[in-house]
Figure 1: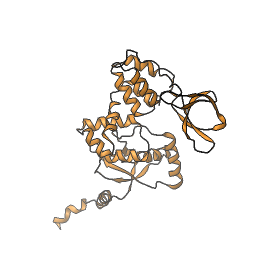
Figure 2 (figure 1 turned 90 degrees about the horizontal axis):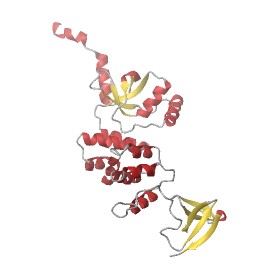
Figure 3 (figure 1 turned 180 degrees about the vertical axis):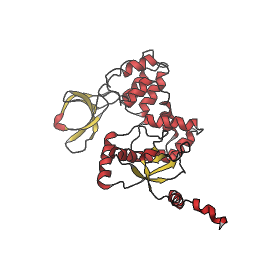
Figure 4 (figure 1 turned 30 degrees about the horizontal axis):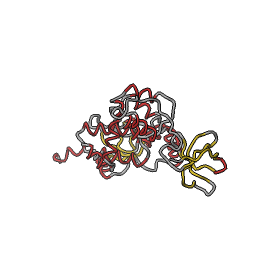
Amino acid sequence: MGQFEGLKDFDVAALGRNASATTGKPRELPVARIERDPDNIRKSFDEAAVIQLAETIKADGLLQAITVRRNIHKKDYFIISYGERRFRAVCLLGHPTIAAVIDDNFDPYRQAIENLQREELDPLDIADWVEKREAAGDSRITIAKRLGKPKSYISEIALLIKAPPTIREAFRSRRIPDIRSAYLLARRYDEDPAGVTTWLNGDSPITRRIVTRTLAESHPSRSTTPLGPPAAPRPGAGSWNSLAVQVAGREGTMVLKPGHRANQATVQFADGSQEAVTLSKIRLKTWMAL
């Protein structure tokens, strides 16, 4: 019997727990032992959406377990791989445990793709994540291929990494409307930081069309004119045989295509926006021709 004496210390329950961890079956883990992934591509969370999710979980329960991996630096602790929004919602409800699947085969690209597919990501979050993948040795071609994005997209996103605070803040506050505009302004900032800063501190609307045209017209290699405040495009500029119109005091150009309905027309406004406007609201000003 002596040869079997060591069996008294055998933990059958632990064997069951390990089996559960390797077969992908959810188990209840203490939320106090689960930590958020500091390298998660998503840094910004819509608090209203998290609250709404918490209400859903309160009513219907957690329908999908989160996925975690063991924290190799802290025994019996885990790091969230997938499902941080669900984790935040459960914490908001004050639940002591959460259903989780333990999977140590973690792929940061799979995590990033899941976030890209589920909700719109803040491009600055993507930029910071790209910087970390480059620091880990991944090329931009590899990053683009693994994320299913064109290399030009990664290049433009990556420029936001080292963009000056002025541009990053303007982009985060949506003063700069899109990645392409931020990319163009960041490139110009290297040549004319004071001009770009002054330009962004103005109160005129900024659209990609305005950014592209203004930067082209004031480029140092083509013009001695410094970059000034963004000017609204002249109605009809760059067009011919079009109508200058006014809609409730707003200047615009009537585009020669119909609106969404038979009694509408499409109007290009001076701020770069387009709207389908009811014909009775349009005041014709002049016919513009070259």
